[in-house]
Image 1 (cartoon, rainbow, N blue to C red):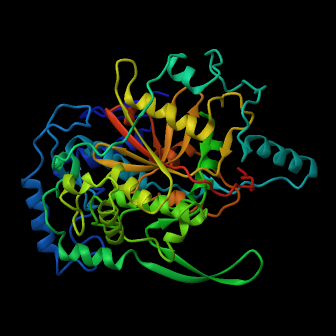
Image 2 (cartoon, rainbow, N blue to C red):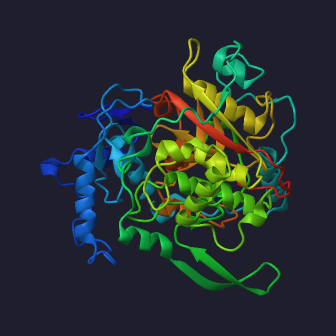
Image 3 (spheres, helix red, strand yellow):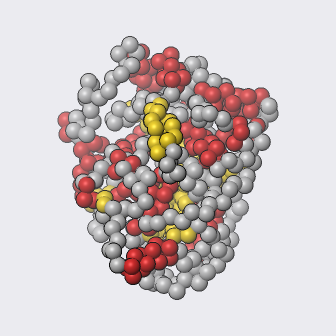
Length: 491
């Protein structure tokens, strides 16, 4: 399909309406976008008593933005920060504002009722059996070492490669990723710690909001065995999202193979006006897997998901125990502040709890771009060396999700897609954004058919166009064992 280009910037998309939304939001006429709620249009609960204080602090941060070139950006321009026009409360690096607002559009994407419909099979026994056979052919929870694929109908004309390494690099050797180290003891600045790098304490309204946490709804639900169970739903947590993404990957004709992590992981998003606590939210997502899969260290997290303030205390305690202790000097301490954290802090926390994990860093070298080495490592993590001969299209694993860091932001990797074109996507949970209403309406559905699965998956895909903007990446993988899956997922 032809890609439509924005007349004001480098953004392009094959969906003309999505491009129109981009133009209206990012380049509005007279500076006012119809997609942005004006003062008083949204929910202002709890804001009246603190709005002046919050606005003054926001403006103060904008007046003292970082002017030193960012070490992790692909651009050499100074790293300045801009308030998100979507009123999410985030100060976004100016170079990232277009991408940030585009994901907000995807976050709010909803479809007409006929765009998503239940899959209905005919009453004929023969057709039912054929449908079940077709589904089981494409879904698997097993990852065999190497199986010959007889159906090459979705292949391109490119000769078959035996591994992801050959497909990415033509069989050339790759430099082994280096271990993430604590580095020196230099105090970090706004480029690394964000716009609030030098604040001594977060504002009181934000501290109260974090102490209260997201809204919890309690309701009764009938379990599969017919008993009534009490369920607690947390407003910013979305369980059960992995099977939905897997079904959408299955229905997308441009996907050749897709691999997904354990379905125990929850999507956990930031609360409104929270700001840049993405590193903590990704740690919470890792913890949701550890708890749900009863993996190593799960007993450290009884009850509710530990709050951001609790995680700050745990990281500070890990530093005091000697784990990546230089982080305390580099940051000046993080307790009760809005300073960004990254992979070393997540690693210190898990190591202090004897939760086995492994951190790796990826940088551009003389042969390969950093994102190429990253894609290779994630592809091998989910599939092993040889995966292009698999019979199944969708592979569900019991692997933990992966903490993923690039300059200024972190995400959680939950899967990996191989496109029929030969391109690759990381499948992610981005704590900056909530799952779209269109995605949420599919939660718990055993079967559905989406007319445009690629639109629903847009907010969860990170490919070359996104990853290629960065020169450095870090990942953190939990290496402890977890229970194996036995369920088969249907389309």
